[in-house]
Length: 366
Ligand SMILES: Cc1cc2nc3c(=O)[nH]c(=O)nc-3n(C[C@H](O)[C@H](O)[C@H](O)COP(=O)(O)OP(=O)(O)OC[C@H]3O[C@@H](n4cnc5c(N)ncnc54)[C@H](O)[C@@H]3O)c2cc1C
Image 1 (cartoon, helix red, strand yellow):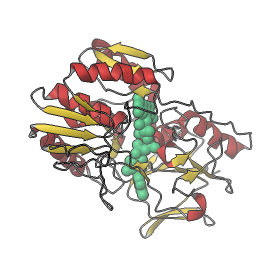
Image 2 (cartoon, protein in one colour):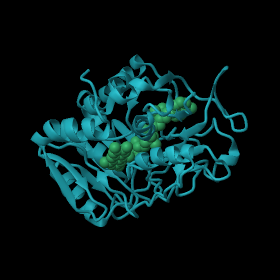
Image 3 (spheres, helix red, strand yellow):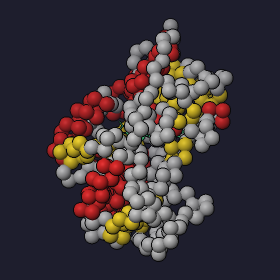
Image 4 (cartoon, helix red, strand yellow):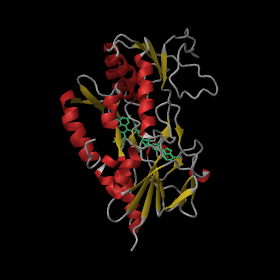
């Protein structure tokens, strides 16, 4: 008897994990990705400041994931979906499915782009962004979320002679985190010599996509004098869902994929969505809250006629904000309390045992 085929569309952080859980003997998994391997959207600061260290943990070729040995991987860009015919399209090629998992994420700034890339393209982009910041005497980071805060801290600690400024619109940065997280982050930023400009909202010209590192000066719509900088990193949260390939009937007004708590798309039986593209909750937090396990269980439940379970998101953002520092990696709980993995444990315990063995179920050495 032929096995049901699950197509996982997008193999970033959450599509990859969903494919890993599903790729067992009972299901045929086809994973489709415009990237040649996992190129994670996590830890922007580390990626810019120390791309080789970032690549070790956040850029991993698909061939290294043991659990993907049973999956078929297609390196290409999805262009369409025929819901009635249960087929996805990559240009002229179509692939049929019994279940479709949409995990194509969002575009954000210059570091998360949905287009087709080879390994060489990824290497070149990482090197170019790093070189741009390495050559700058002054760096202005615009934005108040985790990507902005981690960039400011990591750039300041990597290049202590560089003047680093973090400008954000509110009284404090990290408004979606518990206030305790900002208290810790502010102290770390102060210590690293980052200049903080609260209450600065950038004057973003119409049509400016904020998808490249630019040069200053930056004007402020909040009235302060313009800020000059050799390099400006825009991390202003202008996320756009990667859903141009999907029929509009699956999307909400902002273009994200509508989902029920079970992660099933309403009005369909066999289409599910997860990760930043899925409109699960206000923070669209199913990626960091590891809904991949629930989704894989729900796909199996759907295929065997069992009831599906629901995803319950926490109200606040949590996780790593600052990235790895000299004294270790701080992970913040939803209550804002940090737990610090000491530096020695990150590469001896956290990455090999918790991440590679526990989360990814086995990753081969490069
Ligand atoms: C284990 C884990 C830990 C996390 N920890 C943290 C944390 O500590 N702090 C924190 O802030 N966040 C954390 N996050 C969340 C993270 O910040 C993002 O939410 C996550 O990267 C989003 O994953 P995604 O799969 O939705 O999107 P992505 O990782 O962006 O994946 C989408 C993929 O789809 C591809 N794609 C897009 N369009 C197409 C197309 N048309 N055809 C083919 N492919 C396409 C993209 O190129 C990309 O590879 C974590 C997530 C996970 C899974």
